Length: 67
Image (cartoon, rainbow, N blue to C red; front, top):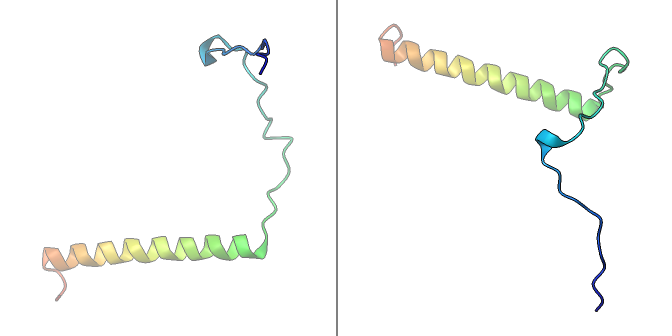
């Protein structure tokens, strides 16, 4: 097997040229499918339920609610 001379170099990120960034003003609105939208709604409801449960447990431990 012949060894091939490569011109690939490893450049440390601090010494690399900065890349062009995306302009948020030129990006259009994000298009979501129904599946993604329902998943995000379910995740939001789950987080709200977990916060409510933690708040309830805090009130029970504080003795403000019967538990």
